[in-house]
View 1 (tube, rainbow, N blue to C red):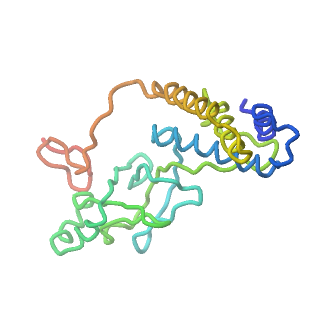
View 2: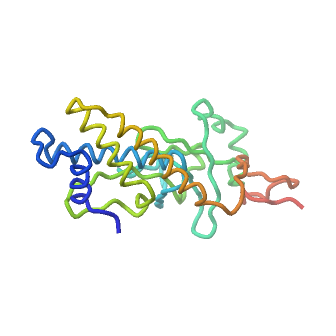
View 3: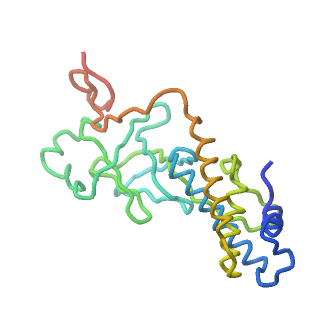
Amino acid sequence: MPPTFLDLRNYARERTSTENNLAVTEDTLGRFLNMSLGAFYSLITTTYEDYNLARYLATISTGNQIPVPPDFMKLRAVDFGAPGQWTTVFVYNLQERNRNNNPIANMVVPFGNLAARRVRVMGNKIFVEPEQLASGQYQVWYTPKFLWLTSDTQTVGPEMDIDGMVEYAMAATGIKIYNKLNLNTAGFVEEMNYYSAIAIDSLSSRMNNGPECVANVTNISDWSYPMAGSGTDGGW
């Protein structure tokens, strides 16, 4: 079981010899520790972007926007359709936002995914283009933010309970404390780099069932042509 917030703060004081140091208050220590845990979370979710994902369903009835939740950090994937019948929706570049808003594109609107939907995160919304195809149900996959620990009994989530997490957080917190106290941080810097490497190595084999593949962002396969409305392999 991961250590509690109180356990982590007590251990940080032991590691930095600040058990009785009034210059490092509990609020300051908690803030330093949360910042260090957040840095570790960013490290593993940036190195392995699919490491910790959340998802939610959203329906567009009017317009072309999907709100993102408060814990949204970055978009990983969007599906359109319904459970058991999802099709992948790929992203568009900002300069392509009006690509399908023209009479020629409108001619193929009845054929569904032949006029492929595209999405883009802007601000706190996910925009779907072309707007005339936006209505429907979506499944949104995203990387959530790290949520700070606030109570003594709170623990980090299971996604953080991996090799090197505690020691990385201690070293990163030690750097912040020693900077505040004008002490030498070299030892903690070395430890932080060491444990970040351990964490990355421990996660490197988490998806070990085959090589990465290139995504077909056209929704069209190598077959003759896609079946109307399917957005999947058609052909003969």
